[in-house]
Length: 156
Length: 156
DNA sequence: TCATGAAACTTCAAGCTTGAAATAATTTCG
DNA sequence: CGAAATTATTTCAAGCTTGAAGTTTCATGA
Image 1 (cartoon, each protein chain N blue to C red):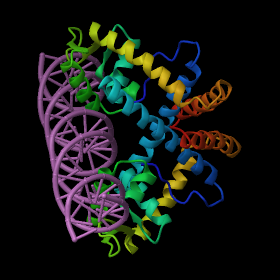
Image 2: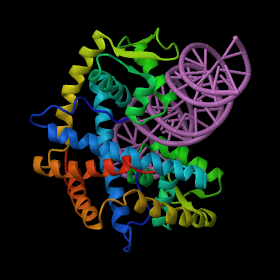
Image 3: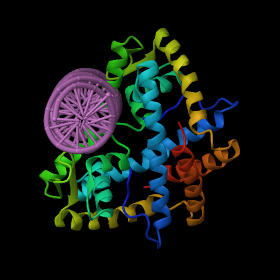
């Protein structure tokens, strides 16, 4: 889903609209490819991968709300994904004594091993899929997107 | 959903990985904002908007398969979205005499009017959300993404 | 204290999404 | 011609996603 209305016009704001459409098409294209490879080669999904990636960075564990904030998705969404990861034995959810509303989510040993393997492949895929972007160009683009992000965060 | 594994490392390919993560976060952030505004201000969704945008560009109509190819989504997906647009009276689906497997999808007059209004708001939103990207920068970024796209298309 | 409100999480309905299987119509070619 | 392959589309199950409503637990202050 990535069309956008009549980007062929010109006028004020049209450059930004065109940028947005290109950005969306690029990310959808790459995302679709990654999703398909995760499915066929590791029988997993992008959301599961994202949750595991977040947890891999935090061996001490993360709260459900940490996860949803970090991943930019809703609480209810994380509940479902973690449920599935738990049932696959890749993740544990432990109620805490301190605050019994919260639960700490952690990768299991299996989950950690599985993730490390998938992450290696994932990184190679991204390198391949963005192969026609030079390292130099990648750094410049990243810089622009980073400044977009920091401006975004200080709004509203 | 947009984490990515350990982007803090360095080494070959890491710059592209970092770029991918930034790209995904930026598009998810903007997309979420647009989705919410479409919902609250026009009671519609991004997928419906995208389908209508595609149809608005083609007054003669589009086949279901044209739509799914253009929007980068599966056939079955388009079926559902068009179903809903039809039930809302925004779109028609007419079987063709020439080839009775296909159906031509068109905006109704209502659909066309509704879309024009939403598209105006949409463009303004994008202009606002990308407001901290200069027009110059927007053109450069667009150029890079366009070259990514053309390289992508000539692969496999 | 204890009621009120806030916080963390889950549940739910509706819609989006995919990939695979099923239908139906058309095309190809032996 | 007629069987086989191809094409266009729909259907389906499973999973993702949101926002709203509900539950449980904790914090605050009159």
